[in-house]
Image 1 (tube, rainbow, N blue to C red):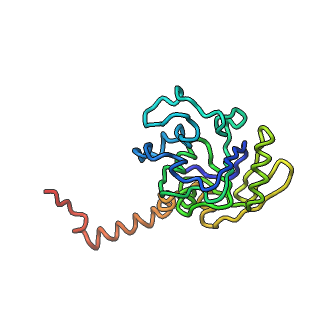
Image 2 (cartoon, rainbow, N blue to C red):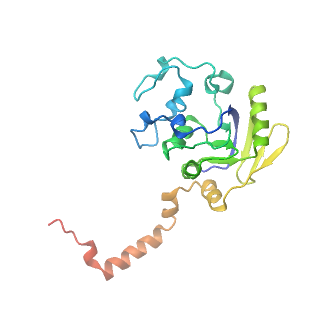
Image 3 (cartoon, one colour):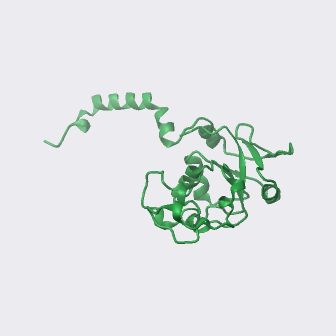
Length: 216
């Protein structure tokens, strides 16, 4: 997993509360578990004017000109700011996969659904929690100022605004450690690889029958 330290980028405002995972990545695109291939269909129902389906050539689909991600001023945005209860609904891990692949490693909101919140950390994303007033300020500024950027610093737990204002945020120390060091569940396990090898060696000596090939 790629380490997360500091994100500096354009902000895309999604001024909408209770965005569920089916809106983030609709159910018809959940046929793969490869973690890739979902970015093109992020917010599919909002981005396009027709109904999407897997394998479709999205370049030929009619886009919704009013949707924020279709507006040229937000091209290349890497920070998504949105309203409360983001990621509610079904517990699909495809939601953070789609956001991450599209380019959003940071989401800022007043609150999140628990499962989406947990899945984000496990996939190298940082879900920042700020107050509704702070989110209001960022959404307003990013809607009015073209190219509006933020700096999100995980180490110092700061969101730094172009004005010089700083919003501090909380993050669980263990999750912070994992993100800063690029450690997912597999990476955490591999940190103890030597201990695991020693255990397997001892077990092979004390219980050799466990390792016997029973296929013959």
